[in-house]
Length: 117
Image 1: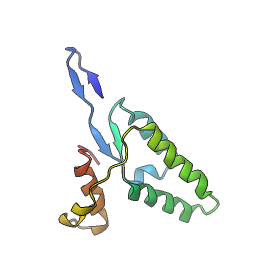
Image 2: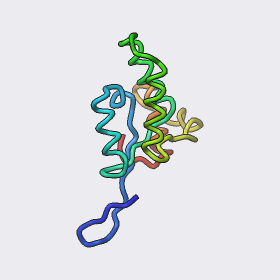
Image 3: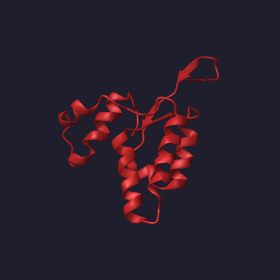
Image 4: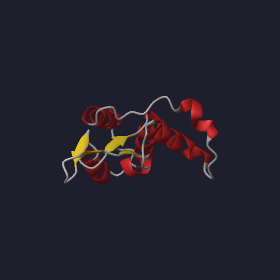
């Protein structure tokens, strides 16, 4: 996808990897889905990131229905073409971060060509 700069030259749209902390709150998730469909950037995430925010939401709000959240995840992937980053799993251990649980996020951002997390 491209945006056009004022000179008429296409500018590539940046990709951003969305972590579970920004996908957890529904209003922010909705906004990021709208903006991340190519208007400002392209949203990317992994199945693990999806699982993290869904599990956190179910833990904090047990009245939520897992089937409804699965539907939300499915709609997100349908709304944002090519949103799911894969192929990063073998590189996770290559990253040394203060929080080892964040290595999968950085590995996915690199594999997905994301300029922003």
